[in-house]
Image 1 (tube, each protein chain N blue to C red):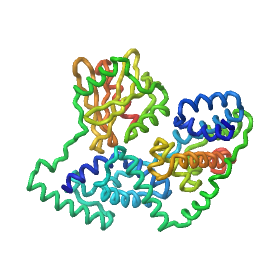
Image 2: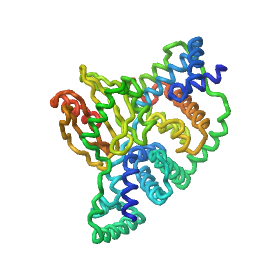
Image 3: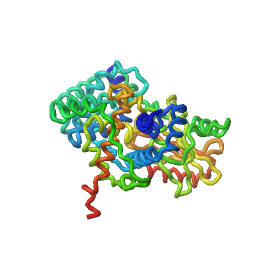
Image 4: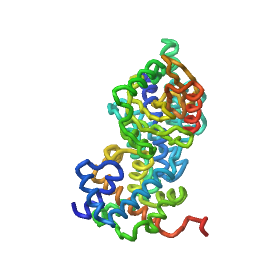
Length: 253
Length: 183
């Protein structure tokens, strides 16, 4: 490996995209080269700064309303001012179709939330994760490692937060399958208790308040925020689990 | 049924609205233009939706948003595209590299860079470099996903990222142009 190649591969290395064989070779080079070490320090500092502090612009809520103005969920709502003529035509067309549907079969008009999971499913996933030594696919206490790991493997990017200051240490992440879809599992530890946080996209973008449930001796709490469904589950007592869910909800808002 | 298609479209696309807007916002560098571009892109996405058979709806949505952005820029700000074609020619040139001492001022400057400085540096680099940084560092996409969004080989993704980072480091190591605090 030439020094020039090594410098180019540093990028793949900090992005977690370098194959294991090249990683070993590159690490050996870094070991022996102060210049490469410095390059690595600068690249990591830049990456860290961008991932933590560069702005991720949030879509204005009105934009989603405009874009989905013709969807079944909002077809009956007034089309907001400022919608382009072309889109308005589409929205009106679909409103007509929606009315036709309403007469034909009202049941179809109500969108079914296919993203719903039952508490049984959540408890089973939690228990499964504690058995067979398969709690985490990635073990890391750093959200900057956990977040990209998850978003690289899913078609959504679940928010990940470090809550160690409040006594919930981040353990890692795992891929799971819930409500018939891939879900992110983010694992925290509070004293001796393992908390699984399951996250997947929901149809609701409005958000839903925390709902607490108990099933088979496990306590669970669920809420929705910004188009994501969250389930927290643990053998923690209900009060403590709810406190965790509230903390998490504040973090993701 | 149209309604069925609409509801499938909405549930596939709505989780990616922020990613879509963020990319458009970074490429157009303007809040209202970004909204117009996203809306236009969603119209296109809806018309292509029947043909969408992929598993990764995020990459699919981002690809359409990205293409819509460049079409929009060509029509409204052709100068930004023209300067890009010239930048591409330099792709084979060696990367800037000048090692200094360990824990050098450049590393420290990067560690301390404020959000405002990072944003302004990212706004200053050419579009084709900016988009790979936004997709990689802000949206957390893999090289393979970025390659599919920008419709280029993985090698191009790597070389653009390397150049973009070199350029960002060069801008950020300049003594506090936008760092009003220290003055």
